[in-house]
Length: 406
Length: 146
Image 1 (cartoon, each protein chain N blue to C red):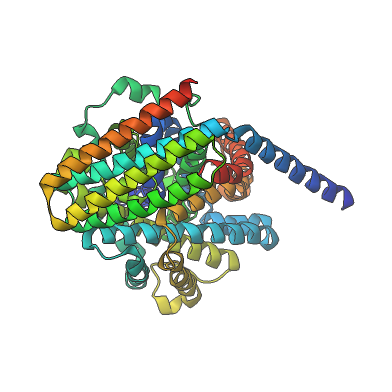
Image 2 (image 1 turned 120 degrees about the vertical axis):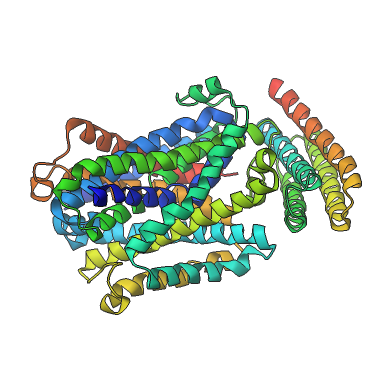
């Protein structure tokens, strides 16, 4: 039982690395600054969907001992699997570049040295952690260090919140102004929240943790608490920005502006704690993304894999994250704005959601994989709703990126 | 096989039509574009003002304030260039370009004051930036009311 409760850290690490990262911080900040509390609903909607999908990934792993990638390859064959592998790898590369940019920017805030100089050291640090540390160490340390991100919640509670307006933000409403930007942010929030790599990472973590069917109950708790924790922090970021930036009419067009969010409530502590939170969130996400791509590629191609294995025993698995981390910093080094990379990557994540989510409806209803633990009608309705929503997002994302991004 | 391909083209075509409808439905009128430019002026003026105020309170380090203000000046100048090239009503465009110019000048003055470490002078400039932000806001509200 103690082991199972400790597995809760998998949910929290997935949440910190995959939820409160540069995409969530940036999109929540932009949403709060431009529309106050009005865009809380996509965060909540995305979180509900994510809880269901993450729970399904864990259930699939516990029942079949297969990861999402492994089951996808097994069920649909390599010809189908190569489509999500290639599509998601390209998008995930951009997300990783954005995370490296976020961590590098956090270091710029503290040191005054340009983020462009920090991108390569950040990628190297991530590689060293992955090379030297087993999965259990990543699981243990990321949630512990990630607790610094609770500062966003403290910052929100320090401000005089309008609880009525906050509750009203849970209900979807049409924008009173700047509709293009509103819908652009909705798409980006959903893209930042329902990140497919979370499912791949979580199911691989469950297989690494040797989950069996006895974990199916605790899996629900892990998915719900872990993702809700991340969502609470993302809403806190939105709320702080709604209170600090929206009344002044500030629109978030760079991390220089976002860095001010906690300074009103917490003074210079707020500045440095923001930098620490950004760094930790992005570092966690870099670890998670690099591992997710390595897991997905190795499982799909039938290579030996495992973060708990010695690197020399899983050379091709190590090669995947090594190549990915070697390529990740260059967009930032070349001077592309980290916030631009973030916006672009979140929009493209939203555009590729159908490829990642459609297989769930088949896998989670196939007794060959999940035995008696097939989806109930609620789970199937959520997946169907998500597929429809993902298809709409895939169509509207690019026009909104072009027209509403500014 | 052939039927499958036709279905694929149909779905692609429908997606393109839907995307085009979204784009067309969301395009901005010149007046709305002018209002957006004024909101941009307001945002940059308020951003520079907030950096100045936090620097005066010693809530942000000097190196951050200098780097942020220098980047704001560049971005304001870039926005000003875009506005002067945009298809906007002539009178509104003149107002907008002038507003960007004065905000860029005030932000640049604040940067120099931060470099000198002169907190008393910074208070004067942040008040000027606050006035720029208010002016841009009231102009944008007037455009919205029209």
